[in-house]
Length: 275
Image 1 (tube, rainbow, N blue to C red):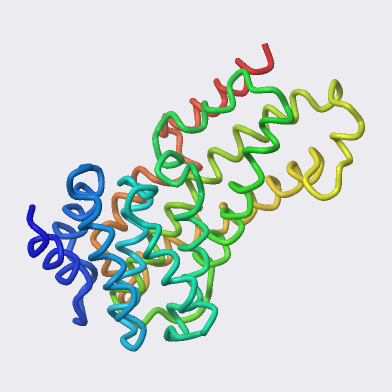
Image 2 (cartoon, helix red, strand yellow):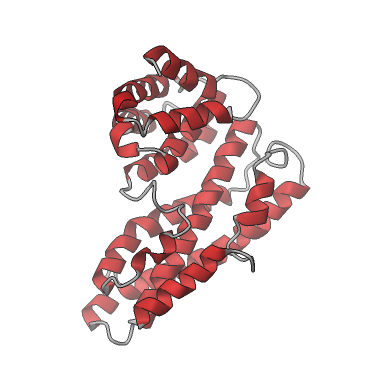
């Protein structure tokens, strides 16, 4: 792909129209971010789009959605640095429309997280297997902080007025579920090792074992609320109800579903760590 093709795809993925982001262009940009010979061009095209999106709410929401997709399915470390720096500057200056400004700090944090393109993988909850408790705690801290933000954004009761923001909210809701599954598996390892853990680690503030378990329990309640909310999205009206991807999330992406392999995998990971 030449630079013109990449710039065109970024533009078409973020056009200021009344539709959700165009999937084929979003997928193409994320795919090109994984190709070393194209990464410089992708980084440049994304950063340019971020720098010019702030005055238009729909374009801003679609740009955040595109950054999110590159972060979760592409090679974010190679291409997102300039975009994240520009986005952080827009946030600090509050130069984004109000609805989109609520999502931008989360997108910045997600893009800067070392595991942003790993946590959605089906085997991600097994990552804690065999890890010592201090390492589990260290890994849970950024995960739980982002899960807190994702759950809050996805549960926001404010009205969604455009397909672009609806697509962004659903993407964040999927993040919240995937993070919750990973967090639950890590918390299970902590729970299994609770009585054998050093007291200083158990009661450490901030960032101790008990704090991590309390956060996990709180997020479980929020994740259950979110699962119930998604059902109401489909039964409602407006942009959220019209999202084509919502059906697949309701069918395959919910934490509490007997057919979900990832829930079983999370339990297996905990049992293996305890053994």
